[in-house]
Length: 111
Image 1 (cartoon, helix red, strand yellow):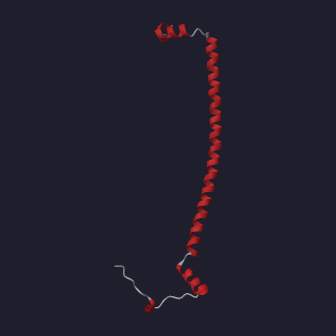
Image 2: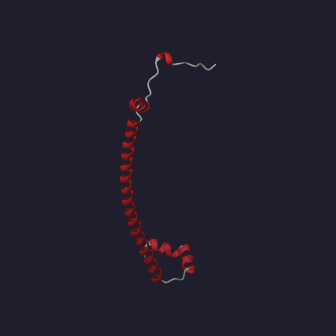
């Protein structure tokens, strides 16, 4: 007989297990088979969930890139609308405003 098998059969742990669990070998084999099947089904479920979530991640990353491009374009447009020369032209045309002359400027000192 193999030394490992002989050691397992004579160890106190194996006697305690066989005394506490009086199951036949067929029941243990069925329990292990069910455990393997449950584990395999769990693995299939996790892989499927992973694939679906990866697809959602890629879709959201593409949407993020599109939003980033739109944001960059809006920043450029904002810069064009708030340019100093454009504001000065609108102030001159629509409101008749002009730059004050040197004699019209008064400097106030806070003491």
